[in-house]
Image (tube, rainbow, N blue to C red; front, top):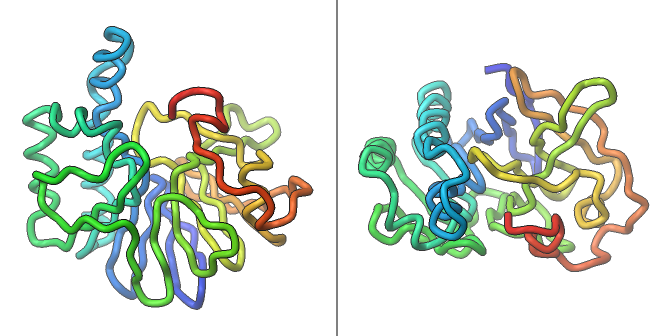
Length: 239
């Protein structure tokens, strides 16, 4: 899987090249910010601008990760759909694919800021959840320990390595996942909004053909300083 091993709060983790996070001890696969229905939402609000294939591509990648890891429970860390209407308008083929992935597995929808999770697609619906020593929620809380979250869609570029890549961010207390869905924007991992949440040493794990762990440069901000900023404000557009 070309995954990167990580440890948080004494829990062994695998950061997958796809942007998913696998917990071998509980056979749990965690993904964040699927943003299913983004193309439909954009078309609804501004006219057709994006190819309408993101749901199939995102769910296809999720199916591959489930098969590769043998995950028995799936945790979606919020913003699973671009908005509530996008969940209702999900393509029948994508809906069937999602129901197939749910069959025989525990499935948890964590509430996000874009949507509360689709109420007619089965699974448990929670504002946050605890699994062993870890707490899973959508948006990071300053000062939290053993926290796994999403929301910010972090990205990081390496000198001479082309475009920035979605990445995980981790220190001794927290882990932020990249956006798993297609057509999602992102926030620089070196933005003060993100560096304020992390203590040094902190690392980024870049996604791609293999998960690559690199040091996260310090932004000079103190951890726990500013409160979390909604992503659409941080990047200056709807995320």
